[in-house]
Image 1 (tube, each protein chain N blue to C red):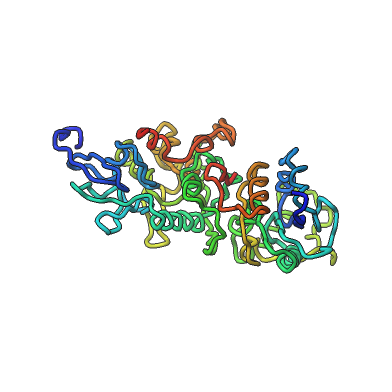
Image 2 (cartoon, rainbow over the protein chains, first blue to last red):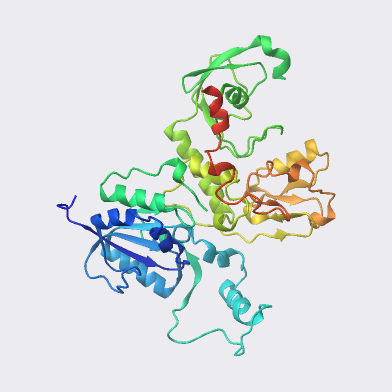
Length: 189
Length: 242
């Protein structure tokens, strides 16, 4: 295998809990096998904040809840040949998307922030303000699945996806053998 | 009905497999007995057939029919597991996911949910083409033993039929029309009805999703060890054939 050029992979966590990145580590010892096939570019795993060159595969955890998420996602689409949505948040918004429907009102975002910082029963916020530092990325009106912002090539379901389905999908994609998931491996939880 | 007329059996085929049916049996009843699984959501063993979810659609004589209500006919050639039918079923299931608020990661029914299990069986993993409707739906936790999270309701009506026909109570019923049609309770909220946790309509197997919740028993079986974590939906029917 060593004569094959290594593929480049980049990963990012948007509006997620980082659980899917933890799940990547659930590949366990097979990571060594995987690292023979890939180099990791921009990723929290390497702590690289920018793309150093074009990547073959981009892996996205989480949906888009703020403007920074959208910028990162566009950056990944521009710099990656294949984009994978990893986990339920990236696929359909997941838990962050609860604010879209459950906080439903004429101003769902305002209601959500009020509940979180001002009116909630268990809040201890001495300033009685919603955080508004200019350094904070602006929140979007809703939480969007990645596929509503850019084109997504593959989705790996799960919350978080198991190490097996991640390893299986990545290794088959890298060897050009991916033809869909085994039914028994599909999980949404 | 089938029990009394065993002697008048006839045969027809499902995907080329010969199946024996008896007068008065539907295609699905005959298929279940023969060990051929036809996907379904609104149909449930022991309840009257309704034929509303259309997930059980098969082609009989070239026409699309609901297998749970269509009577089997002698010599009929039925198509079930075809690419076209499974794609149509997947679209139906996907639309159900998009019509309500189905957050599998936080749902108590995850792993026991027939909607989710049907999505697994029908390979619902492609990027979606439909928008999420994200409707605003109510949570009714008024009853001391039962809660209703209507975000997850797929309007299959199984609780309606179970309450009317088995419990003789009529706690649930349909209200509204078209996309606004919903399952509602016969009263201000569930606490105003005579619902009891021992009702058949409230039992775990009647609600296919996580809408009807029995309080204080959540997560008794951990995620990963639940009904559909160990096998695709319908495998117990398919095993009859082996």
